[in-house]
Every structure is written in structure tokens, then in C-alpha cells.
Amino acid sequence: MIRVVLAEDQSMLRGALAALLGMESDIEVVGTAADGETAWRELERLKPDVLITDIEMPGLTGLELAQRIQRHALPMKVMIVTTFARAGFLRRALEAGVRGYLLKDAPVEQLADAIRAIHRGGRAIDPTLALDAWGEADPLTDRERQALRLAGEGLSASEIADQLHLSHGTVRNYLSEAIGKLGVGNRIEAYRLARQKGWL
Figure 1 (cartoon, rainbow, N blue to C red):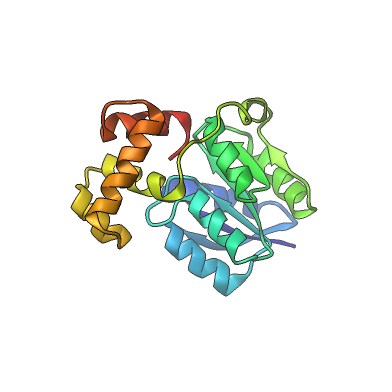
Figure 2: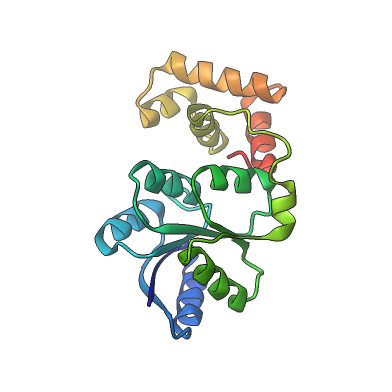
């Protein structure tokens, strides 16, 4: 039996995926989570074979979750199922050790086959995205990305500093670096461009 934890913030989709995967004779959904921090606690508690996660979630994103799994050397495989058909996301996912990356409009049979493939040690990557994944490199550091994401949510530099436990000046430097690297005029343009490229 392949034991799966499912992390997805949209409750209807989470329930539908769990029900569909539950119909597979060799796959068992042992836990679900609506946000990244809850998913992390479920992974530590349940130690599944496979984590299926969305990218955009409250708390930790799916990519941050994959990075944490990689840092802690947890033995589970990670598959991302998302609406984001952006090569930048796929590239960051692969760098974080993700073994599978499918779009949400893929048929459920493809998802079940992909789970089996990554459980056996293989990969399951949407082929159209795989062709684009090694195009333009992501120029942002993790800290620049965190600061830019919070700026895009409307937080001031002081609020970002409080949230990231950094000084106000350090946050301003991160935002300035990101703006310069992306060649735009301000933090909001930088946020929009980085999201468009799949770098946030």
C-alpha cells in the first residue's frame, strides 16, 4: 500500500482528490491538510510514502514544504499538483527534490500512475513543462523571495522585518536587490514579474 498525505487549501478539491485516490486499490490517503504547517505536522506524525501538495497554500507553500523535507532528509517522495504551468515553479521544485509535477487538469488516472512511478523511485513531470524548465534562471535568493512575497501582499518594510525577524534596513536591502535583479521600478512591479515567471 502506498501511504499518501494530501496538502491542498481548497477543501472541495482536497476532498475530491482524497475520494478519487481512495478508489485505487494500492493507494491510501492517510492524512490531509489545508495549509503547509499542518501538512508538516502530519508528515512528521504519519511518515507517509508520498506527499501530494499544491504550491500556493497558507503558512508554508508547497515548494517551502518540499525544501524543508529535503533539509530534514525525510524519506518520503514529493509530488506537486498545481494550476501553475510555469517553468520557474517546476525548476525550483526539481531543485527541492520534488519527484512529480502535474497540472490539476490532468486525468486522475495520470495522477495515480504518477504516484506509483515516484514511489518506485522514478519521476513524473508534465512533459510540456519539462521542455521549458531549464530556460531562464531564477535570480532571487530565498530571503529576497520571502521579502518580495510579503511586499506583494501589501506589507510595509517594517511589517516584513517583524515577520522575518530581520532589521528594517536588511529588508530594504533585500527588496532593492530584487528590484535591481528584475530590472523594474518598484517592489510591486518586481512582485508581479517574479510571480509571472514562477519565481515566487
